Length: 154
Image (cartoon, rainbow, N blue to C red; front, side):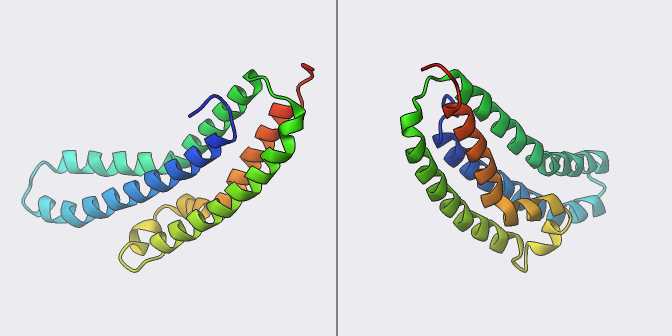
């Protein structure tokens, strides 16, 4: 992340897409091979712990998004900014929300594909994030703008 600028929103979007897709693919691979390995009595406890780790990781995605948003907001408060640049930030926010709508559609299509939907149904928060990513980015971005340009340093 940068030092609390509007560019943090792009980082958050890309990070969310990468983490969710990577986590779902790893869960798919795990669930497809774990049954075969359990048939051969190959350390069932280790396989069960691996499944718990994947579940914990994917269920932590909303907390990660919240932490990244709060971190960006705190860092945005620390940088000096002039209110004359606020309209540019609003234009960037609209652009970022448009990009995040595209990312949201890509993520939702990925989660609703036939081969992935059985795994994705186990993580309803990820589907909620996939459908509402543009609102999440818009909310964080609006709060960033308010924090950056409402300081009375001028």
